Image (tube, rainbow, N blue to C red; front, side, top):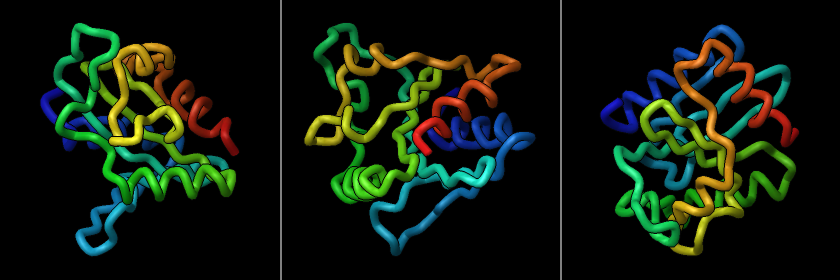
Length: 140
C-alpha cells in the first residue's frame, strides 16, 4: 500500500461483507473522523492513518507529520467518554493497529512502543473483518 487513501479503500473493501462503512469526507466539519462503520447495531468512529515506515527507536513518534489533530482527538475522546467505539486505526503494510484515543500523546502522536503494545491484525488475512470488528465492536 502506498498511502492513506489506498489503505481506506482496502479497509472498506475488506469490511464490506460484514459491515457498512461511510467515508466522512468533510471539508467544513473539522475533527470528524474518516470513517463511520455500522456493525450489528453499533456505530464505530475511525480516524485512519497510514505510515509507510516505522521508526527504529521505541520512543519515536510513528505518525511524524501526520499526527491526529486536536479537533480529531477531541471528537474521538468525547465519543469514547459517551461509551461509543472510537479509534485511530493505523496501517503499516498489511498490519492494522486499532488504538484507543487515550493512547495518543498530547500532540496527537503515538510512540512505536505504544503502537507495538497493541495487537496488529493482518489486512490480507481471510479472517481480517471478523478480527477487526471484534476488537472495534468490543467497546460497545
